[in-house]
Image (tube, rainbow over all chains, first blue to last red; front, side, top):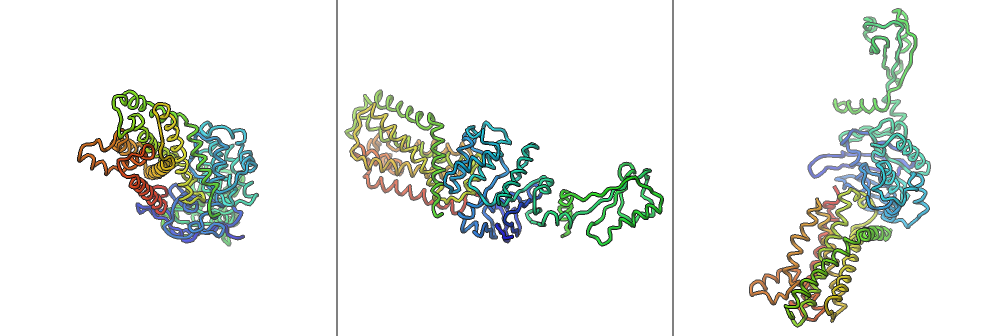
Length: 313
Length: 255
């Protein structure tokens, strides 16, 4: 799959000396959805701002569709749509005039049919004559998405698109993102909601303190870094883990009624059959068992805390 | 795409729409204020003043009053136009759009100039209702009108980019430009000033603008019209240079 956005050795140091981005290398493939995860202040927004021309990088290169965003900014920016995190709208403008403005600003000739399509897709068509100041917060966010889509971008940045929106709107957004991807738009979104990345993304990148510490296929990442947990529902609660099982990474939960065993799914021997056999030998019966895979959230927390401890992947 | 005409037009139209939304503030207020000047200075006090440089006092102050409105409105319109997106955060869109510095300035300053020139002509029309007006050099008058509106709109754009609050937008028009205009011969000929003050007045750039503009009306001036045109052209170029520097460095627009 060809790369539509290429970032090489991107560094941003602010005037006060704060290093917001450190040597970021990232390739975004055409038509994929990439989720950038990271705690507040990690550098996600700075990364997006540098690509979109809002922040001037200190060093490094960015190309969109083969165009350098600094030297050939016109064709590069014309490809990109941005929905920033902050709700910033022209309060006194109508929905229709603000999306028309956005389309013109990006150098596209008027196309009422396209704008109508965008507004209908975002359930804004009935509100097109309303002033933006009269709309609810969720509607304003839809307006910002409509503005970003007005010039038919092939790359769309969504900076925390679902922060502070209700469940219904979040579902709508997810559907919209999927339908945009189906129409060929490449989407890069940042989010705090890991389930969002898990639900939406093809690939996931984790940014921490200005560094892109991992970027990988979501499924592969979950497989590579994910751990599985076996939960055994015991017939009789245990007061403590038997001494014979002291070498196993076990934990007693639910007042001794559940025995949890964590294992690496990629290991040659997971140890599950051996453990079950030992339990049987020790005369510890169980009623039920289930396994669960660690979520992206747990992976993310592990990655960040590993970094904090100074270890590397 | 070597020139983003749609982008310029969008900015221009957006700015003009803002003026139409605030028609009372944009046009009615300045016209009313200037009319009050004509009533007070032109008719009430002017009746006792006689003539200045061979011109009826009420007519004498017309060019100065138009200039005063042109200065303040150009500054305010252009500074507000670019400061407001900074204030609300909508500047992100402008910064991420494929529009060049020149196109951005053309859109914002072009709209501010249009508004100021329309206002200047409206005040001129209003003035003609109060005092007898005769314009000797209409083309020069239009040239001064356009050049002054453009220069002060560029200056306003600079203020808007540099400002961090609405108060800062007000400071230069209120504390610098208005005093310089009042002291710059809007209501009198600087020949009427005593000795040393006349020399000091020549350091006030506004003197050259009002003098040249008045020459286009009545053929009389405090300083030669050529010097006036040179002065306003010089100011125009200085503003252009500062704006070029702002965009080249991203000063106060980008982080």
